[in-house]
Length: 170
View: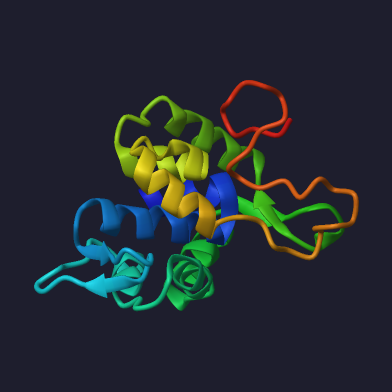
């Protein structure tokens, strides 16, 4: 499995966007200004279509993550996983979720998470070991969805509630 597939199975489209954007920033193929605006690096090359879309981003991290999560290259990762039976419709058919086979593959990838981009694919922002870079991405990924303010606690990927420090809310 590649980074994009592991990221999707671990956190959906936004996790794919986060892992790809983190990878190109960490590798120096895309730079961050002091105001967290992304800018190009001459001669930067992509490793896949999602990275190519990430390298085209010229906005702030939050806007780039949103744009990338909706990009056709990320949707192609999703469609491929559905076609292969690793992702299917969840309860009531409203959302896409990993199937048992998809969860098994993602669990197997946990054993291989030595590479920084794979740690981010599996653990989200919590997988970023560089403290300064984690802080910049954490601010950008704060949950601002429709569940906020409705008694859900506003959980986001940068906090945990079980005291383990692993980002897992359960």
